[in-house]
Image 1 (tube, rainbow, N blue to C red):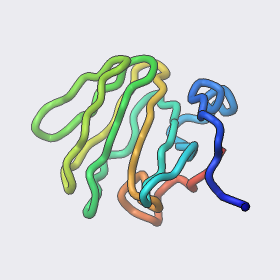
Image 2 (image 1 turned 90 degrees about the vertical axis):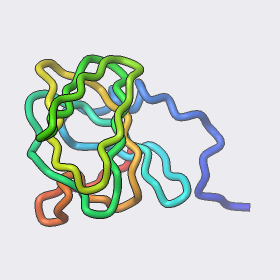
Image 3 (image 1 turned 120 degrees about the vertical axis):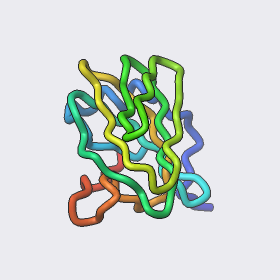
Amino acid sequence: MATSRSDKAVNLQEKLNRFDEHWSPRTVAEFNGHDVMVVKVRGEFVWHHHDNTDDFFLVLKGHITIRMRDGDVHLGPGELFVVPTGVEHQPFAAEEAELLLIEPSGTPNTGDEATAARRLTI
């Protein structure tokens, strides 16, 4: 019987080694209507918010700061933070960092479909 589900473990580091672009998430798995993505980041992302969903960040390697109008959240390897729905934020990494993101499938990374990065699967 054919299935779209993989019977193999997903190696996040192997997936991250496949690309060099920053702020361009790659979907590595899907579950319950959500995309599980890896992304490399460096520098500033745009200030944005999501009207209909929280924004989940888990640092795999490096350090990031989630800037928010009420104060910053600093994250290192193994730490996660969830930005609540509607809260304006700006991810920032002084040096390259690698993250795991989880969000409902089709969620634009900038909060706006017109300015969002194209969703890629690897």
